[in-house]
Amino acid sequence: MGPKIIGLIVLLVFLVFFAAQNAQPVAVKLLFWEISTSAAVSIMVSFIVGFLAGWLVCIVGRKGKVG
Image 1 (spheres, rainbow, N blue to C red):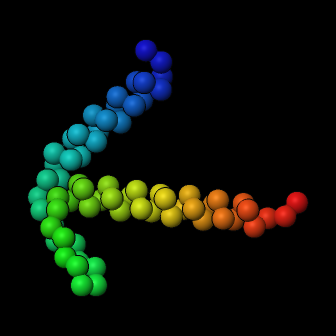
Image 2 (image 1 turned 120 degrees about the vertical axis):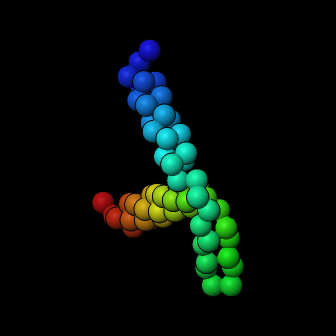
């Protein structure tokens, strides 16, 4: 097995432990909406949204540069 596969397996094992330890429900409120979900899901969704926002800023920033 290559190092990428081993790293992916280790990351997935940590993800399973993280989800198992953060299974308690939390209420997420945004304006008029309220969603009840597990803490692990809300943290992961926040991470993904933040990652995509940062990626989008980098893409837009690169297109704005001339030269």
